[in-house]
Length: 245
Image (cartoon, rainbow, N blue to C red; front, side):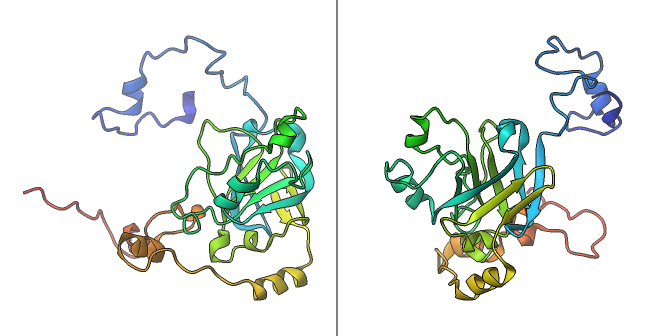
């Protein structure tokens, strides 16, 4: 990474980054490319916004089919992961290569727990046609080794009334990497009408850790972390760790 790394930063070893990597060599330039030969013109991730992701969503760009970076397709909606599992391979599922699979209630609160459900499976009927990638969107996340045109981390999540909650099968969804946009192609009046009609699901847990999680966890764009772990505005210096007795 050359000058892009601050070699003076101290690490857990007690030495600086520069000291730790002094003398390190790249043995295979096909695995670790030099800076003047990037894998692509974009970084590894793109951040999307739009009326489906007001706070943001994430696409792992080099894992996606380049032909799907600019795409409009009809939504095929799954209300939760159980709905997905029960219908994804149904031969009667109304889906084709241009469809956009949309999984709801798979985020920090909706799942709950923000699981790696974002690499939504390709329906069996499409796999049998030789199709290996279609656009998929969710408020879930996915592993760093997962692949496909999967938009994840949609925020705010559907469980709390994010716009993903209002998507219906047959709606047109637009993904545009060039514009960094993810949009539901309906009018604002229709979006508002669906928002008014939407009923928030009941919390999963009325007590214990689950209740604490529900009341204090943040959304994906804020790190899916507990709000009580944040530094209080105006505080100075480090918050000390508890003493070890």
